[in-house]
Length: 530
Image 1 (tube, rainbow, N blue to C red):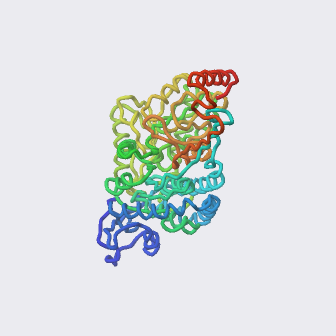
Image 2: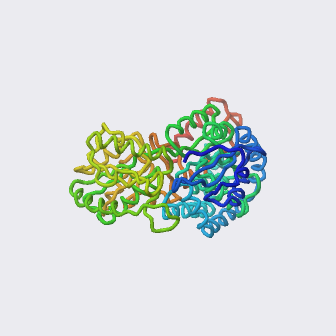
Image 3: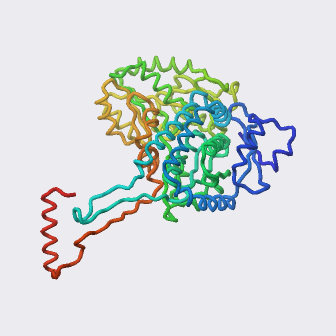
């Protein structure tokens, strides 16, 4: 990948880019930066060729972006919710209509297969439609029981936080940049978005579509730059932070926000298990495991890294699974028909190789895969299945974030649950079984924010009315559902008291008042009042 910092892309007349320079200029014109910024040329993981040159923001530019967003937010918050929702429904339509350009950008910048890139298109459309249709119900004032029945009338109001900072990752560059800011905008906030540099054009395409859908000028600001400077400035200046990325960086984001008493939501790493019960449909389980382990070349926080097999079906499952993995088609084509694309960067390739070689050197068996494929592109690595992994091996407990899955055999559901929970992470899990009722009972015992039954990850992720997020070291807060939009608001309790107040009245003494109140409290307890 090795990006180069240059003075100005227009000075290099000999440069050729994977993205048309006119397209890149149009998209990057939305970046808040100095009139004469530094530029960085990014390269495609597919081929190593240059994609485009990007203007870099500075912490001072972040301050400008936040100030502009704050000024625009006041008018945006007064915009009727039905108007804001209509913009998101138009975004839904535009994302589906313009998907070819989106898919090309996702593949060029992130390196994934086209079918996996389409997941981002579908996810963004689903999220836009859901919140456009449901925001009114999620945000409407709610009445609550007051201290005294009928006499105390409480209403909960939700107000926007103000300016929300969204720091989005490279692995799902369209979906995670856009779907996290959709509910923030619908709740009446302005947003400052800092997408990962490697996949910035993809995120900027989403920003362009939002503008075309009718989002007012200034409500959404974009800054580009490294996490240590520009990302940190976003954390230090916005009113709420939504971060997706590594657990190590997530801790730093949380610490910085805590110093300012600013809220955060964090979706972090995972070491996710997929359990195949003895009664599972093995055909469906094999197909599901292939997809869950190797979607986006394993660069998916929810993907499977531990494959737990009941010993009664382990041999037959593995025989089918290895054949299916060996048959996967790898390649850099910008077309459907490829099963897995590339890793993103030298760092991702190095970590994947290190985990596999560490396991191999300590006695693990490579059932399939286990080698880089430079003939296909600089960062391609074969989908890999390991057996005999022990606690002494790095890949047993550390997140690989690559196309590597380790196989474990168990004799019971209880043993499977213990292994799934034997991790510092708790993001996602999967259970394949013909007995859905039993699957739900097992799921309740797994410490993970989402559990899929008879699917690897998409079923829970795409159910946007339900919450999604991590337990333990996998994060704080939730995206999707009610919490996914209410987290971007401040709740306010407005209570009106009628007739009798909370002090002696009608000439009663303190003693008479407290005696009467005691009798009232006893009566409410007997009547079942909350």
